[in-house]
Amino acid sequence: MSSSLMPNYKRLPVSFAKGEGAWLWDNAGKRYLDALAGIAVCGLGHAHPVLRQNLCEQVGELLHTSNLYGVERQSQLADKLTELSGLDEVFFSNSGAEANEAALKLARLYAGKQGMKNPVVVSMSGSFHGRTLATLTATGNPAVKVGFDPLPEGFVTIAYDDMEALETLAATQNIAAVLVEPIQGEGGINIPAPDYLPKLRQFCDQHKALLILDEIQTGIARTGYWFAFQQHQGLLPDIMTLAKGLGNGVPIGACLARAEIGELMQPGTHGSTFGGNPLACRAALSVLEVVEQEQLLAQVQDLSTHFKAGFAPLSSLPQVKSIRIQGLMIGIELDKACPELVGKALDKGLLINVTAGSVVRLLPPLIITIAQADEIIDIVSALVQSVNT
Figure 1 (tube, rainbow, N blue to C red):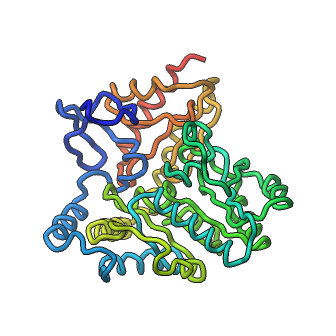
Figure 2: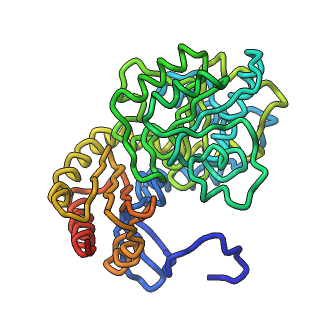
């Protein structure tokens, strides 16, 4: 790697030259099965023909004009996302961190309108919301905050999936918003109790707080629903953030909100030079089109069932603490740190990730075949079995 790059990434010794579907090829021509999808980004895999054609066409038409003017593709995408989600208004950014920044600014504007003194945003331990100063403050992982003091005020972290802790906090703090991932991705594919989100919705209604769902990793069919909250009939957040799978690799983020919340973003309160540009919006529109046309919501649910059956035998191994699967978010927690499995998988031509120290995380493309799923199951199972207890 070039010495001109800042050393903030610990990179694996491989670079990729091309991709197709769920496969990637490195500069030496070796093929790898991608079970990580760029960390839940490339849901349609690599070089999807619809995306390729539409982006090439868009490059030949228009890349950028700025938000000083109307952007037709942006309006089309906003209409589609509000139709799919049930929310009313959208702000477009370039990343998930920026989408969460917009959500946090909306929470501050909301608290100010309510006359709330010393408002706080509640986030959860084990969460990840980004690396800007505000979003890393909200992130429930102390390691990402080291060296960045003084951090912004107005954030409190409590245990994930713990309503009692939230109720206790409400007795002493003015809670403006609760920021939560429906499933924690970076935290280790942590899946809460089935009634957790409904209880959060009830709490926020009772305390006049905003429910902000960070669906940056769970959104866009990753769990077998357009958005993970849709597993709960009738539940609707006040704000939802998206990125990752929305653009399939083209940078785009989105902050969706109910109308009375979104309308707090008046001219001058927020903005983005590149946010919602024609190319990024065309990419996102193409992703949504393919998910619908290829019926990927149902496919993800079928694949999820297949992975659950395939990995079930691992649950009897003494080194396996837990197997957590929802949609195509798969976490296999071992009884000790296992970073070496990433390199071993790479040697076998498989891309995986280890997060939270001891959780093998798999986020394969939504378009993988059963045969590819079986290959992932076989390689990962052998790797897990090789871990000494």
